[in-house]
Length: 143
Image 1 (cartoon, rainbow, N blue to C red):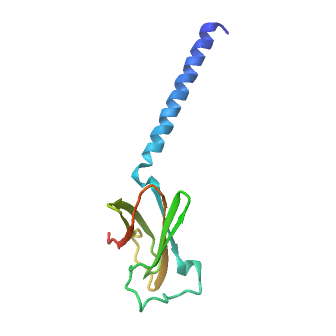
Image 2: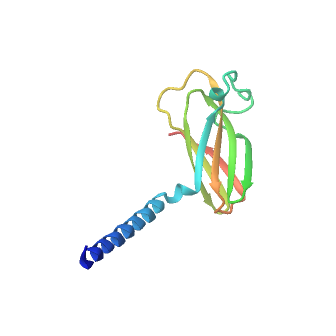
Image 3: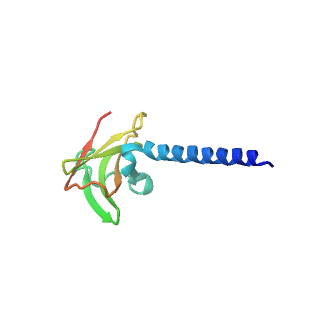
């Protein structure tokens, strides 16, 4: 190989790695504002087949959060809560912090009709500790 070919290969490699680096940076930026939290939901009836009806059905309204727990660890924290709803549903949510208030919103994502039973669900918002908040507000959204 001559020196011109090696020089062209070297330039091509530098161009390739520069483009790769820019692409990786843009992909990490595409995570957007929701990158600081993750939402998980557990259907407690599905996880425990003996758990047919909610123990709290007569105590709480549907979709009313209870057993709210805040946990902290290095760099991360979570807010867990439970609620009752019809069986066979799936949920998602979003988190937002403004003026020291952490607002957690959740909603049903399943379009099919729910099953004819009541179930407990546990929802967890796992978050990076990047925002300072003092209070939490949890809302169910009808979509």
